[in-house]
Image 1 (tube, rainbow, N blue to C red):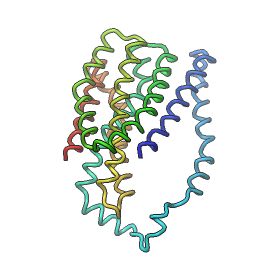
Image 2 (image 1 turned 180 degrees about the vertical axis):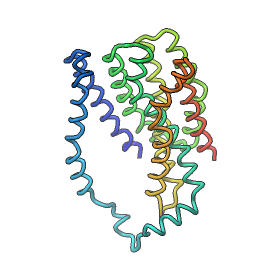
Image 3 (image 1 turned 90 degrees about the vertical axis):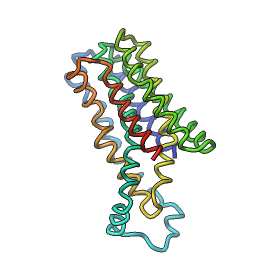
Image 4 (image 1 turned 180 degrees about the horizontal axis):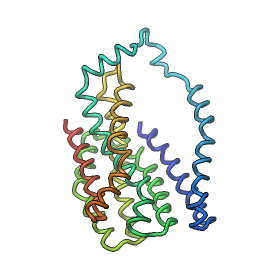
Length: 264
């Protein structure tokens, strides 16, 4: 399960490398004027490839062997009966989505607009974050197979609660490329360690009849309500409080949600 999340890190690394190349080839004025469209067009070119891959993806043997498959009404009824599990799954996934968006999508914005570091430096940090995530996700997923999911989930959320804000405060006090790299890799470490166990755990707690629907709904709710808005929320919090370290408090909130979901 953790390899699915690990594979996404190739996209993070590729996007960061693409940005580094553009930043080196174009002036800041050209990048702001038209250069930012180049990565968007490159991403759109992948749509037909992904569509074909999804259309030709074979079903698993276990799915094909089932004699009956629940319809939409049956799935909705079952999910309504298991609403508490959906809420718990959303809490578990909130830690993942908030941390992921903070250490990937928000890093270039935070580094440039708040810390006033060079774009190349911020994108280099994102590239390294993706590489660390790729290494740690399957490693910690394998560890959770041996020691159990809950010990890994609880340890990572407690570490995040204790260190997220102090780490951001240390960085904001005297910003530098080295400190940004250190802090982002630290946040990345407990994101990857947590998610390596969480994706399997979230699957395991869902009833088999609605496992895919339950997993996807919980994860989508966490992304739509919390994770996807993380860059906007962090920007707003900094603007309202004047505290550049306040994104650490938002991450601590996500860690508290994940901890409650793991314990529950």
